[in-house]
Length: 383
Image 1: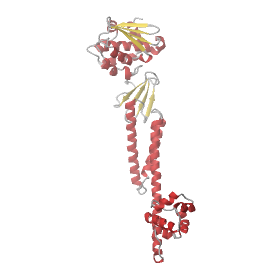
Image 2: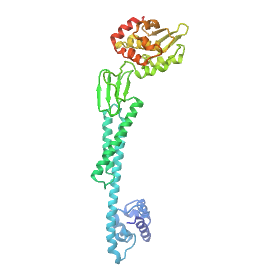
Image 3: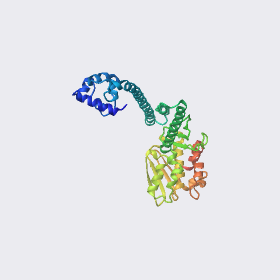
Image 4: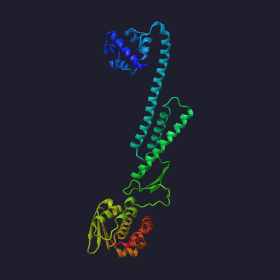
C-alpha cells in the first residue's frame, strides 16, 4: 500500500471538489492537520471514516486504497490486492503500537529503578525492593518488544538482560558505597549489635560503627577479611582519628601551627570545638575545649579520648614535652616522660617513627577495654 500515492490522490480529488484541507477536515470532524498528514503520505485515514471520506470525494474505497480511479476491468483484481494490503497495513500498525507500548514499559521500569536509587536512603529495604520490581518490569518490556521471538529466545534474552542490568546496579551500588561510605542498597543480610550494623552484600561487607552518633564511621570490607570478632571498633570516628589518616600530620616541631591544627582537628573531642596554644620555649601544647568534661563522660568517653589524644600527639609531634587539656570544668595535664613511663608499650608505638600496626594494637584496641582505660588514666593524668 503506497501511502504517498494515496496522499496525492486525496489531494487531487479534494481539489476537484473545490475543498480546502480545512473544509474537508470540518466535514469529517477532524483537524486540517490530519488531512495534511494524509496528503503528505505520512498516514492513512482511519477505517471508520473511509466511507464518509470517499462519499465526499466522490470515489470508492477501492479507488482510495489504490491511489487512483480503478476501471471496471481491473476492479476485482485491485479490490483483492487492497484487502490484502489493508490487512497487512493493519497488522503492521498493531505491531508498531505494541512495540511502542513495550518500549514504554521498559523505560518505565528503568525509571522506577532510577527513582528507587534517588528517593530512598541506601539503608532502606524499599529502595532495593523497588529497584528489583523496576528491573522485572523493564525486563518484561524488553523481551516483548519484538513479537516474532520464540519462547526460548525470550527466556534467554530476558535472563541475560536481567543479569546484565542487575550486575550494573550492583556495581553502581558498590561504587556509591566506596565513594560516599554509605550502607549498600543490595544487602542480603543485615545484623545489628550494640556497637554496629553489619550489611552483607555480594561485592563487600560494610560495618556501620557508632551508628547515629557524632563519631559514626564505616569500614568497607571488600576482601571480607573481618568478622564481628576482629573488626576494628573504637568510640571515635576512625576515618578521621585512625592512624591511617593522622599519620600524614607527623611533624618534628610543635611550633608548626597549621600542621598541629590539622592533627588536633582530626582527633577525638575536636567535634565539640576547641582552640589551642603553643609555648615554643617550654615546648608545651594546650588545647581548650568548648565543653564541660562531665558532659561527655559516659562510658569513659573523656578518659578514652584524652588517652588517645595524648599518645597520638606525643607519637606524632616529636618535640612536644607537655600537654594540657582544658575544659570548662577541669584541666588535665601530662608530660612526655610521664606517658613514656606509665603508658604500656608507648615505646613500641613511637620509637623510630610511628609503627601503625602497634598503634592499633596498643592504643586503638586498648581503648575498648574500660578497665585498662580507667586504671591507666588515673596513673598518667594530673587533674
